[in-house]
Amino acid sequence: MPAKRGARHVLNGPAFSLASQLLLVRGKAARHYRAGQQQELSSAMSRPGKITDPSYELMDDHNGLSIIYRQHGFPSPLVRWHFHKEYELHLIVASAGKVFIGDYIGNFYPHTLFLTGPNLPHNWISQVAEDEVVPKRDMLVNFTDELFDSGSQVFSELKNLSPLLERAQYGIEFRCPQTIAQALPLMQRIADSSGISRLGHFFILMELLAACDDYQLLSSATRGQLADEHSVDRTNRAVDYIFAHYARELPLEEVAEYLGMKASYFSRVFKQATGRCFIEFVNRLRISKSCELLAAGDKPVTDVCFESGFNNISNFNRRFQQLKGMTPSHYRRLAVQRLTEQNHG
Image (cartoon, rainbow, N blue to C red; front, side):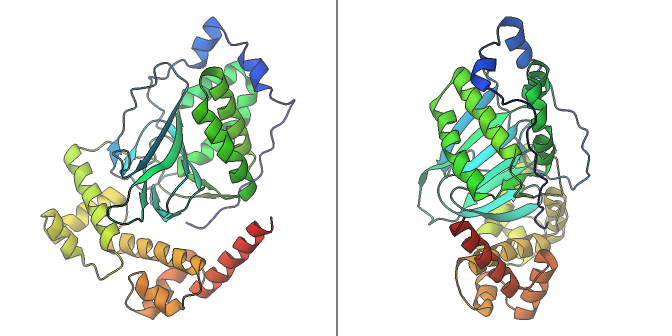
């Protein structure tokens, strides 16, 4: 899905003095602010998309809190293809690899920042040595619709964040270097604080992201769907195997055999689970890898083609044009131009 430039959302009205306003929350207002956190999300979505088949993550550790802060490394039990009813603000602080959000496949690096909406499947897989451990890779904040639905009845300024939350149903990557630079210390303050102070830093961060006009909407699919545990495990094993071997010739039959399934059956269930047929999924992963290589150095396009898993340069060029809307050489020029602009920004 091509990058989309977002309209700039400037918050109106007087400055939102979080510290002073939040201290006014008492008793009934505070309870109302978090009311209904156990209710399920509405199923209404404004744009249809393919349904994916990840695992559902139940977060039972709200403990009456409006937001949940977590951090973890890689590998981790939390690193898997999954979804949940909460929004997720997800900052990568170490390592690089592939990001999967809905039907989107892309790259991540240190200091990349994403926002995913309720029930939108997601996963981040680091490209590291087999025995390498990344102690702290992810900083994330989870929160529900109810925080803003109920909170906006107490603080009308929160309504200004509605466009940001609406976009999050497709997944967002924030790309403005200035925004990222300001977001990093705010995430750390959220990690280091608690109570009203933590909530205040969180709202300041959300206000910052709502004003960011350089972002990319990621997925055409907007929601996940509950699935039986056997199907979930099978899908995760297939994706993990493909991720480990996509840079070489990888026939569908090999993956089916690895899973102990007939090729025709695997083909059918894989498309149902991911929204894409096997070869399209693999090609998108390879094109994502080629984008990483093109942006990272000056390797000849032919070398990029073969290192990404393609064995035919004309097929590579055709697939790249289909998915990116430009030639590999043009993509490299744009990537270099963007990097130059960031370095001089």
